[in-house]
Each structure stands twice: as structure tokens, then as C-alpha cells.
Image (cartoon, rainbow, N blue to C red; front, side, top):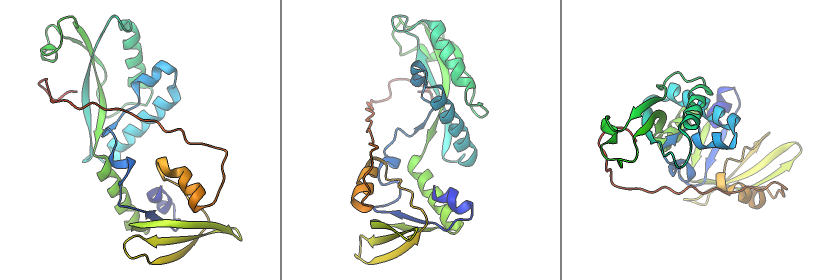
Length: 231
């Protein structure tokens, strides 16, 4: 947001109470994807927007993002093969794919990808998503925002913000020294992620009828048990 705003000619101060990418931005799955499973819930717009953003990241940050080939074995007990293929066709075309290959069928009984898979799985699909160094992407966005004129303050919390005479009056506190400074702004963008309600209530003193519903994703890490660069 800071990089986009300063690029439009606005005067920008970015405050991060800890370090850049301290929270959610460094604890993701390192994975930019359109959300293949969301197609099952008819979330076509959500998938399209995510796939378009995937292309944007590949274009602007090629050293930090690269395509990842994924093998999806087909389980007849779960969904018919034609339905999976239809979903992957939509996945290939909803976002205007330019930089990643399209879906292909894989014969697990003959291909190397099937060597470590149970014999009951004979067919699979190979599709692509994108791997990302998420924390580095955050840092480089902040570096570019600063290069364009934004003031980037780490270890600095916004401890209070009040609206007066059409402007926000905010107090910034350095967590290392306790030093305080004041800024005035026409707008404040609250990008506190899971803590967005705490910032609204405790910092800005704003009561909102809207509530954030937190979602939790569980990832299981195992030793690599297959050969190849695919997932």
C-alpha cells in the first residue's frame, strides 16, 4: 500500500511496530496460488483475482517468485476425472495465464512421478502455481517505497490516532527508546492483519460493526519422499 501510494505522488509514512514481515507476511505457505479448491465453492471472482495477482508478482519480482509444478493424483472415490479436468481448465484460463505452463495429464503407471505413489493411483494431472520468498517481497516493497520518497519506520508503533478538523493526528512511539513523535495525515490505512480490530479500538478509539473472522490453515511438513522438482 505504501509503495502504491507514494508512486501516485502522495506523502507517505509507513509504521511497523516490530520489523518488516514480522507477522503474517513471513508465516505464509510461501505460495502464490489462485485457490484451486475455491472453484468448488463457485468463488470464480476470488480465484480470478488471485491468478491475476500471481501474474503480477511473476512480472515485478522474478528473482523472488518462480513456477512450481504440482502433481495431483486422481482418486476416483472423491471426484470424477472430468470434473477435475474442468476445474483445472478454468484454473488455466480465468486469470489470463502468461508465465506458467498449462495443465497436462500424467500416466502414473509410466511416468517417474508415479514411482512413489500407490499402484491404485494410475492417473494424475500436472498443473502449476508459484513459489514465493514472501518476507523478502515485503522488504523489497518497503525499500522501493522508501526510494520513491516514503518514510519507513520500523520498531515504531502508532499508539494513538484521533480525528480533528478533518485530519488524523497520530502519535508514533519508538519501541526501542520510547521516544514519541506526532504526524498529521488526511488518511490512515490500517493494515494490521489479524490485529486490525485491536488497532481500530485501542489506537483509533473507533467502534465498528464489522468483525474480522480469523481463518487458520494447517500445514503438515514431512521429509521429501519423492524424486523430482515437482510438488
